[in-house]
Amino acid sequence: MIRASQGRRIALALVAIPLLFAAIARLQARIDAQTRTVAREKEELLLTSGPVLKKLSLGYEALLADIYWTRAVQYYGGWIGDSDAKFQLLWPLLDVTTTLDPHLVVAYRFGAIFLSEPQPIGAGQPERAVQLVKRGIRENPGEWKLGADLGFLYFWHFHDYVDSAGAYLAASKNPEAPEWVRLMAARMSDRGDALQTSKLVWAEIYQTTTNKEVRRQALQHVEGLKALDDERHLDALSEEFRKKYGRYPESVEELRDKGYLTGIPRDAHGYPYQMGKDGKTHLDPRSPIQTQLVPPNAIQPPPVETHE
Image (tube, rainbow, N blue to C red):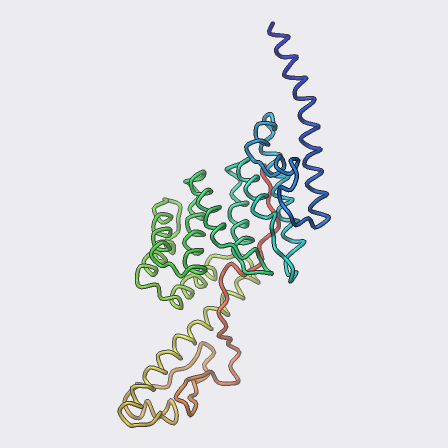
């Protein structure tokens, strides 16, 4: 009886595994053909059903998860930047990947980036990104980076400082989480000052990254954000000057001469700030600093990782 039972299982595996990989091959062919419609036929329901695939995998869930994650990345890469991009298969692919292997952390982290970025860079579905990362946190409670990712999603895409603070605070309770995660929770709680938060994030990236290009980008943002902060402060002083004297100051030097400043503020490269006739402060034209804000997740992700 035991041998008969084993024989039936082996026979089932010999039948099921070829069918399963045939289904995956069909999915690859559809993606390569830039298929845009999900679940039009019954076969597609099989391909986009994580629970069904998990039952058919016969212990090969991790392998199938790697295959689906690779296809998700290829699918995303095939559409990125296309003005007609809808990314209709992106969520089903990520859903299946993380159902097959709930511990494939890279799929949650980079999948959230793919989903949340606005079209045509991404799917423009930050709600789905939050859903994906929450699933990752539930399945991988020891991964503090997922909690930090959730905090950033709430902050950057929804300006939801309450939930962002909660996510960062929960992540900071992990013994392996660095101190900056707690600092982010505190900053989010402090009425969500977006500029100050960005400064903290980019400063943390600058201090911790080992990638020279990423470090260079982070330094540019730290300097630019500091300049923006300085300009806002000087603009506020300029407005106070106008209320008292009925006109804007002619220069930053006049603010100093009238006692609003103790010296002449300079940017990170030593250039003094200048002031226009409208009372608005700006950088010296010779300064190399750029004040364009770019989110930390705009840095290009590293090569695709696979489950080992």
